[in-house]
Image 1 (cartoon, rainbow, N blue to C red):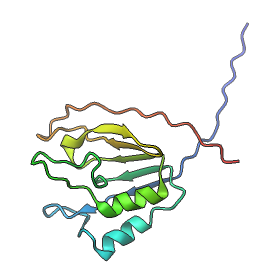
Image 2 (image 1 turned 45 degrees about the vertical axis):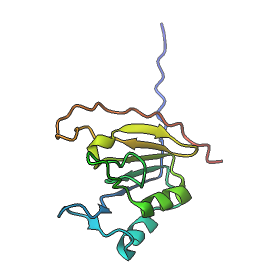
Image 3 (image 1 turned 120 degrees about the vertical axis):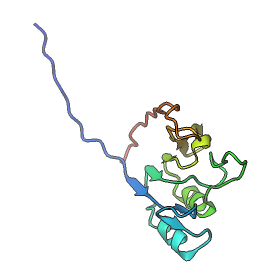
Length: 134
C-alpha cells in the first residue's frame, strides 16, 4: 500500500498591473508621451516587482505595428531597465506577438489576436522559478 502526501506551498511573486498606454486613437487609459502623468504611472512600479503586466509595450520591444511604426513607451522602458522585473507581459500591438529573453527580463507580447483581430496566436507559456528570498 502506498501513501500519497500532498504538500501545498504558498508561492509568491510580487506583481504590478497597469492599464495605461501611450495615446492611441480615443481609447481608455491613454496618456501623452513624455507627460508627467505617464512618468507618474510608471513610477508606481515598485523596485521589487517580479512580474509586470502592462497593456502596451516598452519602446523597441515587440512594438512595431503593421505600418512599420514603433509604438512602445520610452518612459516604460526606462522604468523596466531600473526595476528589472523577471517577466514583463504586455499586448496592444497584435503584430508584435512573441517572446524575447534579455539579461534580466523575459519580455512577452501575449496578443492572442492577430492584426485582423482573429484569435490565431497561441498562448506563450513561461516557467519562472521562485527566487531565494534569504
